[in-house]
Amino acid sequence: MAEPISDLIRQMWLIRHTEVALLDLFSQGRVRGTVHTCQGQEACAVGVLSALNKDTDILFSNHRGHGHYLAYSADVKGLVAEVLGLPSGVCQGIGGSQHLQYKNFYTNGIQGAGVAITVGMALAEQYKGNNVVAVPFIGDGTFGEGAIYEAFNLAALWRAPVMFVVEFNHYAQSTSSYMQHAGDLRTRASSFGIPVTVIDGMDVLQVRAAATEIAASVRAGKGPAMLFLETYRLGPHSKGDDFRDKDEIEHHRKRDPLILSQHLISAQDYADIKQQTASEVQQIITELLA
Ligand SMILES: Cc1ncc(C[n+]2csc(CCOP(=O)(O)OP(=O)(O)O)c2C)c(N)n1
Ligand SMILES: [Mg+2]
Image (tube, rainbow, N blue to C red):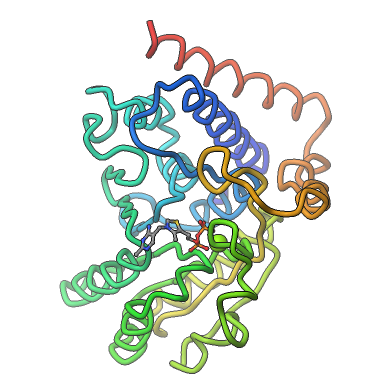
């Protein structure tokens, strides 16, 4: 049964507060390695995960995976501890921000690698007769990695049960997508016979609806498909490294998924969720640093 809208908003706020806190911990010098946070892209993570079966489906995230991980597990403590390099982290503090693994959830910081691995995992599940949808998350900059086209080809050829999810946030670090890719990324997978659905990735309900429909088709054995989400990163690429136009960022702030979802529940419920999730994250961090 579909999660209530208030749950989706709660998950998005949990992600937002955690990401802001992680950037703060980074500036305090407490983080091991780097962090890539996903402010602005929460609706992609929450919408997609809410359409899947978390017990059986396979999720493969990338360098920007905290939101996906929290939408999968709600495990703020395991994530923050992992990023801080603590033994209580989800991977005992060894993997760090870009290498998270828990149940059917994986990440890999090497752009494109997870896409090929996911197709292999999907084929393995298909071979075993398991009714699984495998989902790799792909950034637009990652369309510059050749491995993903080999993955698209074999997925289509062998009808692997894969839902490719693209988070088109228009940038790879500070390089605009239009400065690095020829043609239109939205049409590339179609040339392999993979149907592409393009939707507004800032609207959590639209993301959930589209992901639900595509996942059902993939699960029914109709072959791989792609969900192409138009989104925007409201925070820096990793730490403070943001060279994008300030006016452009301000323009996109008006389409923050947390603002767009505000009208979906009562003002009081929204305020309570925002406050409770902030306290929850703060309490976890206080305990971890004690
Ligand atoms: C193979 C490889 N090359 C370079 C990098 C360094 N790197 C990390 S993130 C990134 C940009 C990725 O852009 P995109 O795929 O659009 O994802 P986004 O950061 O926008 O979420 C780069 C070049 C990497 N992780 N892996
Ligand atoms: Mg990008």
